[in-house]
Structure formats: C-alpha cells, structure tokens
Image (cartoon, rainbow, N blue to C red; front, side):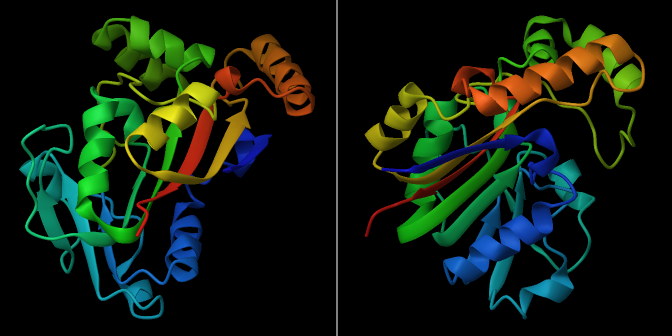
Length: 241
C-alpha cells in the first residue's frame, strides 16, 4: 500500500524546495541517470550538485527546442514529447522527475505509459504538480487561455521569457484518490508515496477576505482530508524489477 499523507500548501516542494526534494529522492534511490521532463530552460538541480549526488548524467527534456535552447550550458538535452504514443527513446533512466509539468499534459495515460517504458526496471519517477479541483486551477482549466493568462499576470506576475505560461489540461493531475492510485497501478507502477497539499495563496494580496476563507478551509481539510480538494500533490512511483 502507498504511503498517503496531507500537508498545507506551504510545504509543497514544487517551487523553491524542489532542488532539495529531488536531491533527497536521488540519494534515497541511488539514481545515476536522471531525466527531468519539461524542465526546458530551468533544470531543477544545478550542475555543481550532480557529482555530490552521484549523478552520472542529468538530462533536461522539453517538447520545444526553443525552451531547451534557454537552458544553461552543460546539461544533456532531450527534445521529445512524452504524450506521443509512438515515442521511442534511445536509452532508459533510473530516475525520471518533473515539477509543475503534469497539469500541462493533455493525455495523462500516454504520458505515464511512456515514462514507464523510459524507466529501467526498479527505476523511480517522482512528480510535483497542481491538481484540478482547487478553484483557481478549475478556473484555469475552464477559461479561455487569454483570460487565464491575464489573471495570472494580475495575481502571480512572473518573467514570461524564462518562466512562460503554458496551457493547462489537468489530465491525471489529481490528489491521492483511490481512482488515481488504481490508474497508476493498471499501468504497472508501484505507488510508493502520494502526498496531497491543501490551500494556495492566489488571493492573498488582492482578495483578502477570500484569502482568509481559504485559510479556514485549508485548516478544516487538514483535519478532515478530502483528496479531491487538494491544490497540489506529489507522487513517487516505481517500475517493479
């Protein structure tokens, strides 16, 4: 049975905590050949940490050659679409990870099927992502792209050259529901751990009353977890030997 836990959104490792989260998993599973899906211009682990972690090869992947061209020099690069049913890679990896990518995947089943094939037997894959049914992400899924992009500029502005906004689909981007665990298991994965995170900060600076209500909801959900209402999640899967 997988380990299922819940935390507040502040503990979600998809942002500044991602390097330490990925590094800890690499150490735990003694990974040597690492692929980061969708990293493009922003690989999570800096080059100066790779040797200390025992990583022999760190590959950054993206579907866009333009995004890969923005990556710092020194990384292996792989231009490939993991939602392509005909995808064939020249090699396998013992650790595959992503952060803030899965919500942008149109076809989650094909995506994870290709990840399974790209893993060595016994290899591990780990992902940090936003989940569909938090209100801002549900709105992002339903609104026209131009509207959601304008709202992002209002509530969470950022450097669009280095951290662009991409269309979100939320296929298979869910909290640790029974249905989602069974989906992974049907593909052959062993679900090692699944962690859901409640709450978000999108209302904090511009909609203070809604932010207070969101904090109250977050506290209630931490006492009475409903996996369908997470805002973020992490999942760690293994391809059995």
